[in-house]
Image (cartoon, rainbow, N blue to C red):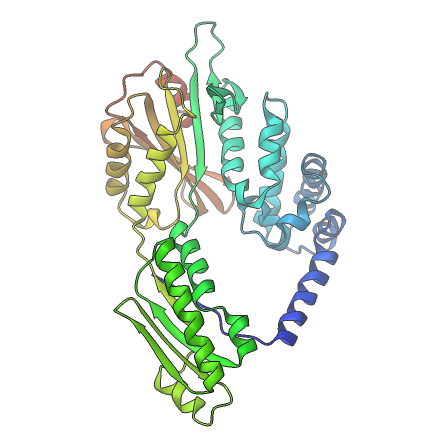
Length: 401
């Protein structure tokens, strides 16, 4: 996979786009504007759903605050789907969200979840935590959000039965974004070695590639070399190339040079900079599981449960490979009783339960058409804590089983 740099734009165009973005947000990123849209503009909504969505909007507004739409208007967080998407399913999602928030607001520790729901980067794991808590409540279990687990560290959930001697099941929830940290690093590396706006100011047209991720020390060294290279091209007003072994290749030409167009064409014709990085979604899934199991949020003397929302890349792989990866990753952590993989997606399959080997199972249900939820429950073959298994089953097995 590669991250491709952006084509340069001039300052006037950049300023114009910023003004458009600010004007759009100032007009549309307000609760009143969203309510008007639901009442008057969303043609797919029938009268009943429209009325329910408006009531839900009031509840969500009350809990998330007036500034929430402005923070989330450009966010990819799942919780923000109803802001710009006028499809009927986003109104249904809003209704379910309001119900979950109203249920969650009665639970100890709710304010910590609420704070995370107000931050775009934390909203996806926070909504997964809220949904897991409501799932437990609806299963007749007692829930606390973000209880103290060990020292000053907190788990996401504490789940208990109603019996006095009920085991304490601690749970951690996380949502894995579609692109890993390496893509963030690639973006940062590209900005350092190919600073598009700065190059535009220098009057240079530039392209090139980096063949692998680099360390901080390597990036610093490469940054020094590229800065000097750009300065030479700018001062001499001559095209040039920079090669660092088989790691970095750059070319640059002054835009005003008479042969600039031919030079760019000879180098592929595109002024982009790419940073190659490798990504194995199963390796990343296993690493996330290990990190969540070992960092102290889950006490090792109590049964633990992980709820993971893997990236969509994982679900393109065979289910047996996914389960084997999760099972092997859990083995070093006997306090883990199971991992639940949660996936929300478009679908029209009938709700059903699928029995898998080793006591694992998968369940499919419709949350709000056409959005369905698939949960794959993977048991830990190395677990020494099975006293919480009945609670796990109550949460994830369909009630009609």
